[in-house]
Length: 130
Image (tube, rainbow, N blue to C red; front, side):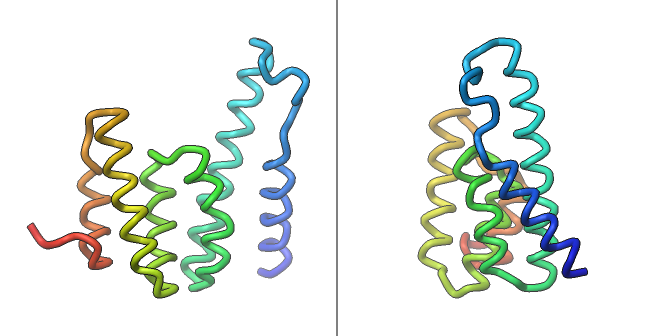
């Protein structure tokens, strides 16, 4: 419902604020900060998926962009980003995102995108058929 949706957006907004900025480099804070980061990612992915299911593509972009910026190798977040760009008619931006993901995966990890990612990109018409 709309109240739950609003609460999720609010929680995501609050979670994006820097937590414990004066202690961010302290070892004891690292675990807590990583936990908050994981929770924020889970919330963002869930919310973006719900927004996508309702075809609220601008909202998907708003929610998922910070996830992709924080971890550009996160293929799950990347796919939500690309789906929303294609749905909004921004194919050139989707192709740039696809090229960036491939480059980062190759350069940083020596990997190709997963089969699931490649299938989704094919379904969106962003890569050719095998």
